[in-house]
Image (cartoon, rainbow, N blue to C red; front, side, top):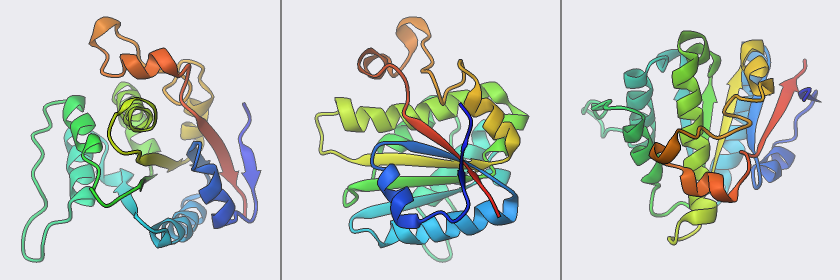
Length: 202
């Protein structure tokens, strides 16, 4: 499916789309970072919302992504270092994603330069995308706990756009590995993740 084009993206309209969808946003670095800053400010202004920025250039492997995620979700107090990650696998990342702040009703992950991990390790990238989208679906459709809307905005270049078009990529299908998948309940009630792709112009 061809990416929808956005010449003058309206943060309010994008925020509405996030009620139902995750987003893949393509564009030149300066353009998409300006978009991410504007959208992040809008999302942070919403009541009971938590915005988690992920620097993709710092998160190209399992350990570095886990540390970046944990640091962004639980900033260290002044004078202390960021939490160290055990990096025992994607299961640790899933556990971190499930630990949503108690006060938040909405949690947004802004993953800029997501294509950096895609270029480094496409299999790992797919597994982490599956984790982000799977935990979001759990919270919305499976969990008996309070409803929390979790959405991810993936920002990157044309390689990210090509991955978004792959029928067997994790923007379009769940990873199903027999009985070992942590998201078998999600896959049983949702045919596929809900992801829209946009291309920024100008």
